[in-house]
Image (cartoon, rainbow, N blue to C red; front, side, top):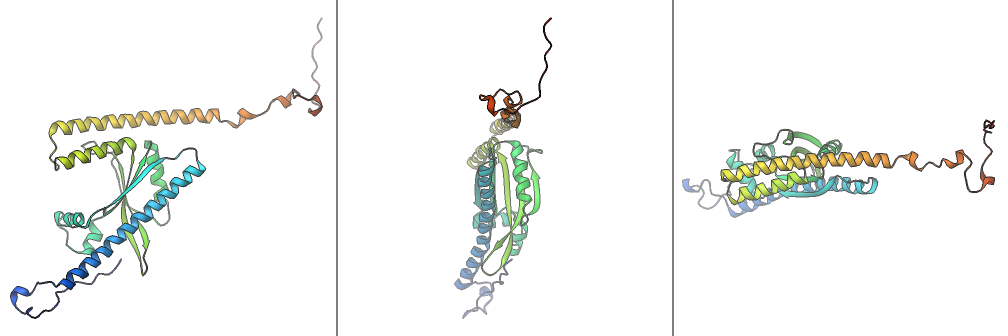
Length: 268
């Protein structure tokens, strides 16, 4: 990772006085801002790397398969203010090394799938790539959160090739179904509107909605499996086999090779 020089107050004309020992110059603030911007830029590049990989998988599925499990992809980069607020709230040291080590969700990518089974498929394809390292995995589908939230969270690291160095950057990947994503989006809006203090009746309604969404996913998964089984039966290679040549029933008898003579019993 990029080494960041420790900022020291720039000496001034009156810096020897006790009240000016911690004063920072405009140049110091400007340098700190540039370093933090460069630090955040690495996370933006990491998002670009992950979304490129997912879009390649998506296009490959469109080209080589009849079905594409990836419905859509989204991403978000935490704002500098949000990053610093989290560092302060968690009581981490206020420096870049601390942020790099402790705040692993600065860069986020969300993959929305059609069916529950697609989640494991996308997870395995991403984690299986050579330059992606899985750091942490949290399965909120098998172990749903108390409020009803469901999603698979992966914390991975990926190399980002800068002009003068290579950094391994963490990215949080969330993989969920359309129903899970719809519920999570609604829950986020409600919690934002009430600043986290959601009335108990709304919390109960959200929990019920989460249960309905889970039942919908299970029903859609069952229908998907049923359609797959039917499709496999309908597209059997034996269905198009021309059996007429076995019995010499082609339109032109001259084109039919002689076959074995079949003797029939004579009527008495």
